Amino acid sequence: MELLDYFRRQFEYDTWANREVLFTIQRISASASETQLTRSLQLLSHILSAERLWLERLAARRQSLPVWPKFLLDQCEAQIEELSGLWRDYFLQLTSFTLSEKITYQNSKGESWSSTVQDILTHVLLHSAYHRGQIASCMREAGHTPAYTDFIHSVRTGLVE
Image 1 (tube, rainbow, N blue to C red):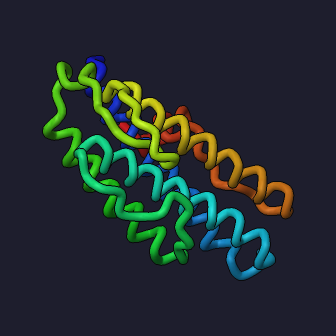
Image 2 (image 1 turned 90 degrees about the horizontal axis):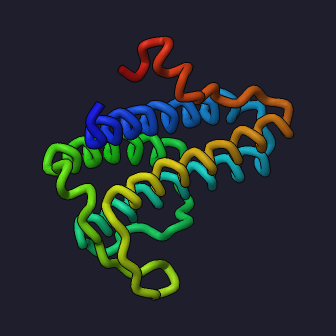
C-alpha cells in the first residue's frame, strides 16, 4: 500500500471513530451527569477543532476556531461531517511527493515551526486517538460503556475498507 493511500485510509478510520464517539455521547446524554457529559463533549470538540486547525495550517489559512471550543452535540455532528469532506478533498490534491514537503506554521503559543505534511498527518491521527482514549476513560469512570473505536474492529467489520 502506498503511503498516501495509507493516510487516506487512516483518516477514513478517524472519521468513523469520531462518529462512534459522538453516537455514544448522544446515547448517554440523557443519563449522564452534566459533568460527565461536559468533559466528553469538551474533548470531542477539541479533537474536531484541532483537526480543522491542522487542515488550515496545511492550506496556509488562518485558524478559524478556538483550540478548545464549546460545541454542542449537533455542532460536533456538523463538524465531523464537514471535516470528512474537507479531508477527502485535501487528499485528492495531495501526491506522494507532497507528503515530504515542509509546512511552516505558528503554534498556539505564536512560535514558528516547520513540519512535513506526513508528520502533521501522523500527529493529527495520534492526537485524535489520544483524546478519544480520554473520552473512553471518562465514560468508564462514570459507569458507561464507551464507543468501541479500535482500528482493527473497523476493518474486520468492513466499516473502514
